[in-house]
Length: 486
View 1: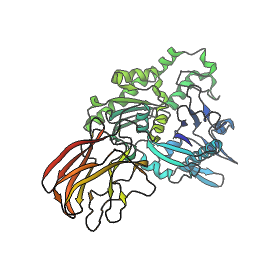
View 2 (view 1 turned 90 degrees about the vertical axis):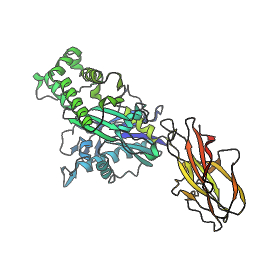
View 3 (view 1 turned 30 degrees about the horizontal axis):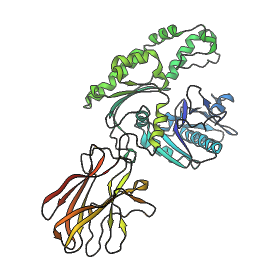
View 4 (view 1 turned 180 degrees about the vertical axis):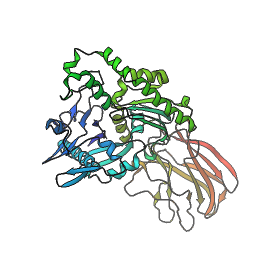
């Protein structure tokens, strides 16, 4: 199986493989670019052309049909557009949403065919655009991939930079890419992948200063005497121009033209607006733990300098183009992304009538510790007169285990049990050497609601139990350690 992250962009769509996975080499030849300095990632120009055959990415550029009416670009922005903007191609009308769907489907089909194995894809969606993106993705035929997982780009970005989303829960994202300069202040409420929800956007500002327009203005100034001719390429990362310009135009000239463009002022205005919006929403800008950089435009020295003047050492931006893909793969992984309980643990309960065992959950995988509130609370009955001991066993559940929907374990003389039984394909292994023996004094009665059990995880990553005797109205044990969950 191959795990990939797919970040659909306006300019490039990035396909990222797991670190150390070399299968990407040579894939999508003629469609994607492999950047030497960026191992593990394929760059596919976000272009699709509807001709005699569908052309994708680099194929569109090589065919010389970039400006053709049958070529669609800026795919990401159009996916989020509320109305189906389109144009006539041949005898039919094609919307930009349909074009984006054809692009994504075509790239993944070709990739899956070349890999000749199942593909697990995690697809990033724009922060704040989840509903529109899901609506669009629902119409995309993705039968070529084994599974599809969705994650918002802000969560992926934070994971890619290695943040602990419990402690670094309030961050700012500075996104300077192809179409615009965007600043967001977001609040994470991270409870692990299984309880994942996108962060809350506390402030959002978008300024129509994209690297595409900026590059075009710079190149036009450089080639003012060559009007009408195709403009060469331009790369922000190392400020490398076309070979014809590299010997005549250096970084000092680059700095001067950016100063004339008032780029630093534009960045500062965007930051000021976002921080003021956050402040009006009750967020103290000083509480922002980290500032995450996204997009190649954040490599521009004058941009970095302005950010550093505002945020100092809180800035993370070593991989502004790649952090989202790597973070998305981390999200896709089964391993926890921070210090959490790694497995699901259950309580083994035997039905005295049928003899079957059931496993209500006491702590779920991806639970952060220590827990403030109980991870599970159960009322347990005694089931015969004169019962003087209650034996309980903790088991580890393979595959995550079932969620405990009920909060009572009622098994008495009628054998009634009110919790969800484990699924047939789940397995459970003992997590403790012997049973937990709770003394029943005075002895229990048939069907008596006798004990309240409350489970927690302490600061040493141990599962604990508090046992309350409901008849005697007293606590027998308080947060007694049961097993080590490390």
